[in-house]
Image (cartoon, rainbow, N blue to C red; front, side):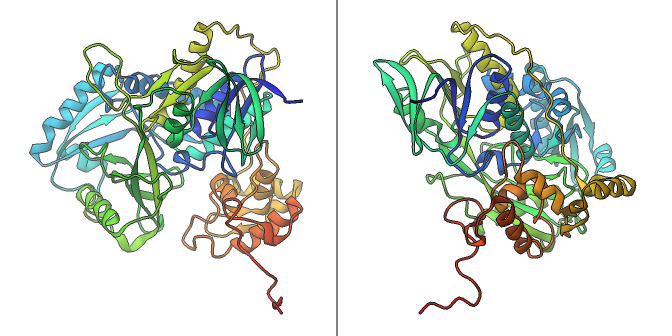
Length: 494
């Protein structure tokens, strides 16, 4: 007999996991399906990790409203879900006098959007605040509500809290089609069978256009990925303490240089529109564009100290703004469409989608309530997701106490990032278990230092094999098809 759910969420990115967490507060059965081997493997794991203040989206757009509303929710979320978040603030920097009027325009736009805590500072003040900034800086917009975060930690934290409150997460479960009764959606077909539900929520990120088209909704809506390439720098050699944006262009917010929660400096992204939704390859031309943009802000940045590059794809859509009098063709879609019943449809949730995620989740609940859902809060709902020990951030005394309780925390597996066996095992057996190398990497930051996993990889394969009860030959980097090993060292084929 097929199990029936009240709400089925397609897509385990930060928005999908936030929606699952919001819905898990209420009576009803919640299922989240994700086609990859882990949550957050798409846009949510490859971005600039910025919580945007909200001055960039066009006034009157849904993007602007969700951005500003979502930004204000982050302090409470960080406390409840135990993830790291810092309100560092951010700067939009004008290089030369010609760019200064554009920064003033952003300031005015931010005021219309309701962004608090913005001030204009002059060139000397900006140079005093960031010693590495281009000496031709003429001024900057300072937005105090901007912040930095770890997008994947947030995705996992929201998903885990949903699971702790009764939601179910199925990984390696790819949406294939809707199950229909007339014009009503009653479930989804997947590679792992059919699942029935009263409501289906399309939160498929870069594939959300294809999902909505399966339901006959918005055939004109198309997502074209915007490829963003990045540099990551060794924190021992490059140290930028601020979030530095350039003046934005038609391609987006521009190529920025920013610090991160992990103390690395990153530079990027560019914004190349591509056709292939799986193309995460870097290009010579793209990295040269990123380098030029980064050097415009920080001329002293030395590319020799780059330790890695990566690519993020942003789900840029052509959704029109619905506010009368506002012409804007890249707005979010958050709706219950009239063409079918039982569908909540999301699309085009690109930057500032990470910042907006909690506001979008709340918006989905409000729309469902307006559609007749009678939400009853669970008596035992717990908004708290306990944090797990992070050895590198602990005092020597606390480390000693932890090792006395569990000696596995005394075994350092990743030297660069000081990650222990105890931390790895905790993630393997977490509410949403880490079952691949990359899943552990994203949760602990293992393998991201100067050696890029050269020291720890074999040890992690051994731990995964032991803890999951599988052969080392079955351990993967990111899921089926990415196995590390294919035979025993001395095994010779006849």
